[in-house]
Image (cartoon, rainbow, N blue to C red):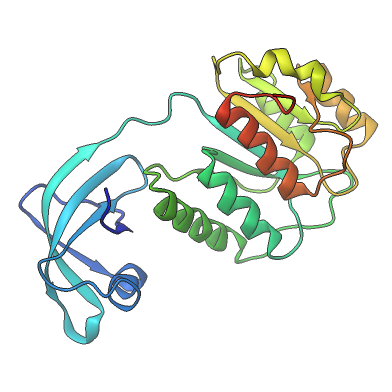
Amino acid sequence: MAEPLFFSKHLSEIGATLILSGDEAHHALAARRLQPDEILWLFDGQGGVAQARLQRIGKRGRELELRIEQKQQTPAPKYRVHLACALPKGDRQNVLLDMATQLGMTHFTPLLCERSVVKPGAASMERWQRICLEACKQSRRLHLPAINNLTLLAEFIAHVAASKNNLWIAHPETTSVESAPVLRQPLANDIIILVGPEGGFTAAEIELASNAGAKKISLGSNILRIEAAAVALLAVFAFGRSPAD
């Protein structure tokens, strides 16, 4: 799939016409400078992908008329990787979601912890969805991650405690060597990664997570920012290696 990739919530059947409009059409013309008869790819964020040929550019370049030439459904990731973390400040939220999406995060839940200082604004959800969409297009990932509403840490832990998922909590006092043997094993189930706010989880929150079966994990002695810790841990699981490897 070397040709450019664009998002369309709905994909037409092979041989049918599809109209691409809005931001995606503008990007195709302004940034990619596509011309009639060129090939592009479409994805619906749910594993559907289609090859299309540009038939015609609509009035004022605001829509593209495409003919679907190939279509297929790709399977969802075998295992889900759920990142639940406190929100960093400002644009660092964008960095977090962009990189996490590229590394295979399938679910994201912003957490409200005892030491949290950042809460999402009214437009946050829409912005996060856009960031994840662009990251999917860049990395050729065909499944958009699910983004949940802000959730209290205690409520989140209560919700996942009964599941059979592997639950991990970022805790800098833990030596990374302790977790290394586990991380060297192939991923055999869904995982959930908990990352706290800048001040870290409180002792009570650590105990709450531990009682629910969470395993502590550290990336070393340095105190990392929220987005750095989250992305590093996602990379550890994505590549199946421990930080000591």
